[in-house]
Amino acid sequence: MRMRRRAVAGLVLCLALGAAPVPAAAAPAAPHTAAAESHPTVHLSRKEAGKGGSLTVTGRGWRPKALLTLLICGQNMIGGTNSCANGDGRAVTTDAQGAFRRRLPVAEPPKPCPCVVHVTTVTGEAADADAALKVAGHPVAPLPAESTGGRLTVLAQPRLAGSSGLLTWFGAPAQRQLTLTVGNLGSAPAKDPVFRVGTSHGVFATEWEEQQWRGTVPAGKKAEVTLPVELPAGAHGDYLVSLEYGGKTLAEQPWGVGRPWGVTLFWVLLCVVVPTAVFRIGMALVDRVRPRRTGGPRRHGAGRTPTTGHTPTAGHTPTAGRRRAAGIGPRIRNRTASEGATAEPGTPGGRAALPWFTPDTAPSTTTSTERPTSKGSA
Image (cartoon, rainbow, N blue to C red; front, side, top):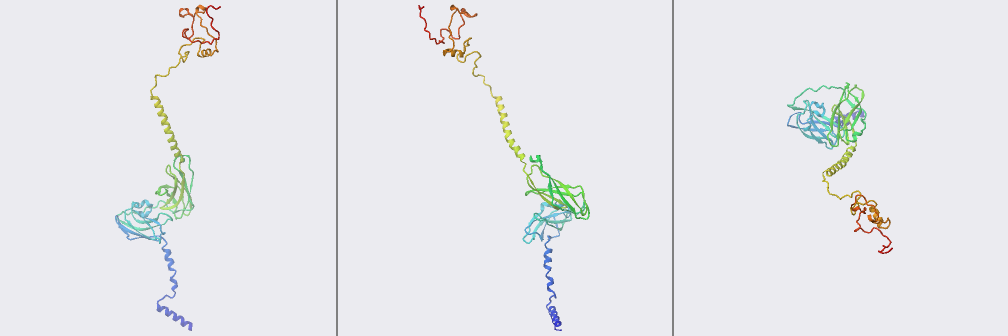
């Protein structure tokens, strides 16, 4: 009886103070609110604005210190950033709590409305969010029907297959095959899907190229997709290959390309060969146009001595004369026709042929040890 009275008294006291019978039941509401705010959200200060005006974009639930881009896009951004006013976009960095606030000028996108303000991350983990916006005066058109159904996603890590050939060493474009396994998470088959393959190098913008894969990925099934990737001529360094489908990035794969040393070797050889060829051509032209010297040293004719220039007779050569002067060779006596010498036909006076010197001025060429006989001696 006493216990009942105490329970009734406690209940009356709680009702008098205005408190709930079970106050602890409201405690789990805080974690639920925090979890709801973890998803990135975007809010606009105005739902409709005209070209030339501006609006304030705020967001919550983003990654702290993340770099974001803000764009006004047409057709609900079905065609990706090609349907956005990229030249009038803005960038913003979130604070430590993942929130931001940024003014955005209103511009007409290249595609008709319905339009949205698209916010997406630039680096790190991909995240995006959209907020509907009506651009006053901008045309409105129905959304285009999707040519392919299904929602594709990457199931395995992509890989770059192939190798560089000899021509790539001399600056030819490097080529690879991007192979990956995709799965269709939608309810309709994806027939001949169109992918966007992009390559970026360093801080430069990504260069995109649309490529259509011939085939069908049934709903709930997977397929292996192979797409060609090509870099410009002479490319080298670290590249990043990206793959997009339906405006979403499916995969990214790094690609390191070696330097084309053949081009360097070609320029080194060119710098060596060309100056050498020019020098040889110049020397040939100089030798051709240089005047010839008409007067030169007189050549000694055959049969003439280099000292006196007289023609030696038979039996007397410069070598023989030197030998006789040294007392080695035979002695020569000058004989006249009266002493019995036979006159050579054609000589004046019937005198015998004389050596190359005259009897009056000729030096003695003999070193006779005999003493000459005096007159009157027997």
